Amino acid sequence: MRTSMSRRSFARGAVLGSLAAGGLALGSSGARAADVPGGADWLAAVDPRLPLARLTLPGTHDTCSLYGGPLTQTQTLALPDQLAAGVRFLDIRCRAVDGVLAIHHGPIFQQIFFGDVLNQCQAFLAAHPGEALVMRVKQEYSTVPDAEFGALFSDYQRRWPGLFWTEDRIPGIGEVRGRVVLLADNSGLPGIRWGGGRTDIEDDYDIGTIFDLNARKWPEVSAHLTAARAATDPQRLFLTFTSSSGWGLWPRQAADAITPKLRGYLGGLDRSTRPVLGTVPMDFVTADLLRSLYALNFGA
Image (cartoon, rainbow, N blue to C red; front, side, top):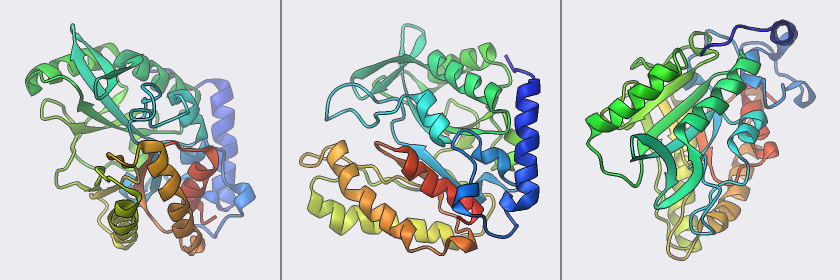
């Protein structure tokens, strides 16, 4: 159920509103790095008129994949810790089994169900009502018809009323605060179509070796980030996955190789111009890397 704003949350919102008035909201002069909001509340300080497509949103690939060993694990932070550190895009892979949706990475059950994910998202949004989340939902390691998968999702939607925003358009941030914007990677789901006309996705994930990462994956990532910076369409969401894995390059190795390149790219930007990189899902995120991305929204 939706939770009303508490007195404590209202006070937090008033403080953030004062920060925005003092120059942290987009459209004002550049902020000092020390003035950038913390990871749990950064989106609350953004101009509510801005569409999600005109923000830099840090995210995680295979958000809940903490188990299964080096071939499967993609994160070390659990979902609540990711949200508190600044993650706003979630990549949720659901296996339809026995009438419920279980979170999987390939054949590996990640010891969490879709209802657990929704409880954690709802709790975070109740505590931080100025925030919003974007969630890709995809069927993983099951092959039920899309209509059946959609019916299962609808049952969750009924049990968490008002949590999901499911229109097929890119909203302004003010429209979706306190909610989860659905990116539908299944034809049985409502919401913004994954791979449709409102999304521009770079996700070349099958990268076999470090040589392929250097020669192919990173050039694709950097080119797509640059394209996102040049884009102006408020109804087109750029998503650039830095994650990859292959026969000779497992997720941790790939992340360790590409993260310094991403940091170098970020270091070369003129942050005072508030470059928009779109949504950037990553493996093995850290709080400082997340902050370096969402701080772009504040010119810091």
